[in-house]
Image (cartoon, rainbow, N blue to C red; front, top):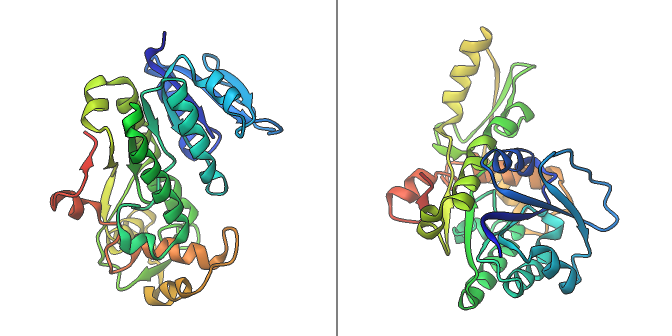
Length: 286
């Protein structure tokens, strides 16, 4: 019989997994990590079970998931379509909760999914989950925008902190939400281990937000902390959005990275989740 805190995780080697797995183990969850056959990924978690599977084999997936209440998919962009196999197996194994690989920009916003096709793939998975609710598999989609504490040092918010440079989009006053990886992990733990939260957030998207800020606020803070004046370049987001008028090159191309930044930072306010929550769209985990 599955225990309420039992969870199987697919694709746990990425950024979210590196924070979520330790948090779940600390919370007392029974954790099984799955890697694809042929993968060189290894894990060093003392109290987690690690198995390999052929993601195209329903029998293998069902065998692994059976005995777990929850399934978390942290699959990468290239593997998103494989989630259908995981969902089907989860139903047959009698799991009751599926957390799909969202953890990014807002797939509930059609203005956003129309700009970036990969978000449309995630939307199709949500639609499939909605169709399978009748099979007693609930789901919770967790939307985070760009990861703040990981992305800021990487330059994802327009700042080169070491060089003292900033690229300010559309004047820098657009308010946006972003989430830290430890807060994302806390939200996952809550949904997995708290039965009331599991019920409250089932079959819907929820938002995780650690900061509500603007580029100009970050710039002021960075200059205060470093004690130096940043070299600032202004950028019009419409130049990035122009890339979406034709298919983007494969992989993490400069064009794709520019579009991801535009979705986060532009004056269109596509990543201002606080505004959506206040307007009655979806919910924040608390």
